[in-house]
Structures are given as structure tokens and as C-alpha cells.
Amino acid sequence: MDSRASASTRVDSNSAALAEAEREMRLDLAAAYRLVALHGLDDSIFTHISARLPGSHDRFLLNAYGLRFDEVTAGSLVTVDLDGEILDDPTGWGINPAGFTIHSAIHAARPDVTCVLHTHTPAGVAVSCQRDGLLPLNQWSLQFHGRLAYHDYESIALDLDERGRLAADLGERPAMILRNHGLLTVGRSVAEAWKLMHNLERSCVAQLRLQASGAPLVQPSEAVAKKTAGQYAAAYDAMESGAAADREWAAFRRLVERRCPGYDA
Image (cartoon, rainbow, N blue to C red; front, top):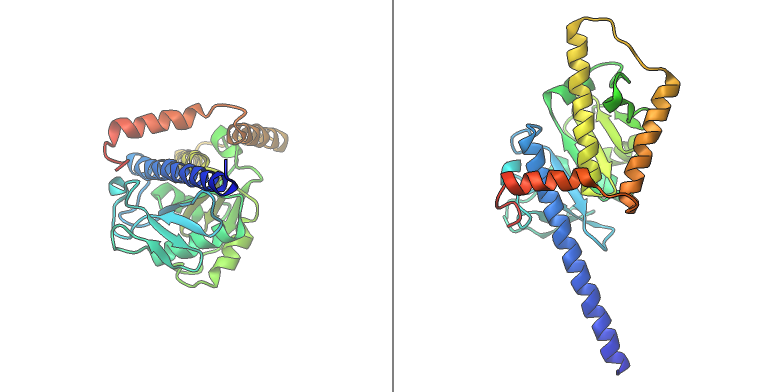
């Protein structure tokens, strides 16, 4: 075969693989938006989930500013770069400026991160307002022991100079409580970011219910907390490396396919 023809075949093959990877990323991201809505974690048209495009370090997908989460589809997602330039916007509605500030900060600082998920839920906001933040009280919350960051509230995230502080506070951790604001998780995949948020949200709900009960609280020892966090981290690592099947995300995708026809449009 001619060397030029061989090179052309490789380019075509790579382009097809990237196109397929982007399509799957869009489906995962649209599914995450629908899962947030299905679980009641959305906040009107606000908050956001982003995913870095396969094969790119500076382009990511974000929701169009104006769609409810139960309206987001794989084809409606907006492509934006780290400078804030909108590269593709099927809706023409643009993006939430605060969403760009938060998500561009993390995608720029964390090349290991594919997905960033941010919510404002009553439980998450309530815990974000508590001085001691999330308490290590149960199996859900123990997975975040030593792996949860905090970022002080600075106002609505419209000032781009906050990005450096957001990234610095997150560091290498997979989750962060934005004080007086809400919750944030990051993942090597959309699946990981969603599962972390699902568990972080439930941790906050359980904590508030326990506190409201007024009953004395039993807190596991430091040794048990560290061991549990390590067990969870190892399980996430195994799924992200492909060493273990991600049955939970597959189950969540089936839920979306059953309950949200059209999310893949």
C-alpha cells in the first residue's frame, strides 16, 4: 500500500474512533443531566455538568443556558474551550457564565478529570453552611474521609480570578463542598462523577436527618474511617481502569433509557 494511502487510512480510522468516543461521551453526559433531574437534584436552569471532549485538553461540553436538566439531550450540549470561546452551540443560547468559571478552572488544573458535576440541593446547601461540614457518620460519608475539599464562598462565581482559588482548594481530591453554595464532584468519567455526587448528596441528607432527630450520634473511629475511604477509592480505581465492571453505571443508564426517551437525540 502507498504510504500516503496508509497514512490517510490511519487518519480516517482515528477520526472515526474520536467521533464514536465523543458520541458516547455525549450520551453519558446527557444521561447524567437526566439522572440529576430524576433524583430531584436540579435547580431550575442553574448548576451544570461538564465533560472534557475525548482527545482534547482544552475543549469541554456544557449545558445550554436555559434548558432544564430534563430537557438536555446529547445533541444539545454546547462545546466551549478554556478561554470561554463557544465552538459549537446547537441551541444558540450560550452557557451560564458562572458555570464556565467553575468548570474551566477545574478542567484547566486537573488533566486527570473528565467530568465536573455541581449541584445546589437543599441538603447540600444546608451542610455547606455548617461550620464542620460533612461529618464521618456512615458508610456513604466515610468514602469522603480525607478526600473532601472546601472552598469559601466569594459571591456568584462570575469573577475569573476565582478560578485559581477553586482549583487550589480542590487540589487532587474528587469532591468539594462550596461553602454557603453547594456540592461539587469530579471524575475520570461521567460515571464516576455522578456516583460520587449521588453518594455525597445522600451523605448530606442522612446527616441532616440524624441531626434533626436530636439523638446522640455514634461516630466511627479514625482507623475505620480511613479503611472505609480506602476501600471505596480502590473500588473506583478498579472500575476506572477496567479491572472491574461498572455495573452501577450500567444500571443508571438503563434507568435513563427507560424513563427518559429522547435523551440521546
